[in-house]
Image (cartoon, rainbow, N blue to C red; front, top):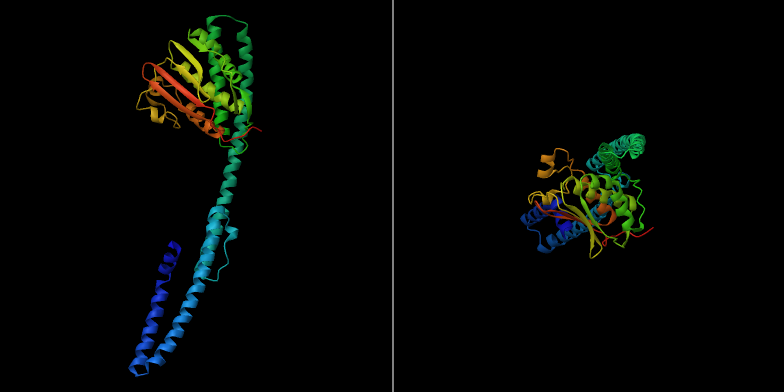
Length: 327
């Protein structure tokens, strides 16, 4: 109905002129006192011919509209219908030229993105070598300085991994491997990386075996768990970090840290948002939780936060809701 009304509106000039000509024709015949039957017969023929022409033009316009609707979805200028109308032909040439320019621009941007990906991938692998070497050297020393340096190296390693994850997030070649994984294995692997920091800062860890199997990508979920643990350690000067499960299949990481201001809570998963804690700390990037939300969304998981300023924060990762199947 909307298309029919739009069509009539686009043809109102032609319909108006046709009606005007019919009225002029009828008026002239009436002035010459032509019998009414003689006037009505040719007017009826003209009206019938005009109606047939209008119906045929409407069918053609509807067919073109449907074709263009498909093209609008497919974004393929090669599917544009043939036209004998000069303005329409000019518009089609402009559209084809713009599509060619857009394709060329996309190809250029994809090439630049791939070059950047290649560079940072090589850089990350190269920088991991001296980091691993320093870890090996520090393992031979059991001093406070060695433990502190080892903790700092772990942070550096985490930031390097964050760069790679940020770049790979929108890549078409993201290597997701969805399969059943042991959640305890993922959590323990992440905890081992921060063991030195727990010991150095005398933070208590409350963790019991979770005994859960989840369908996920182990590498990407490990990154999420590490980010959540990293934030818990960063903003917990004293107290403990607790890891436990809630129903339905929700991994919870709770700390007794400084918490998050109520006005910051709606925006903590936004890209680049640091909030009051980040501004006072001067070290937050506002990328960690943003990446966690994006990764959880890609994996079919959920992530939410609950916090009380001065009493701590709880991050909940919902692992029961997923749209992906194991490979």
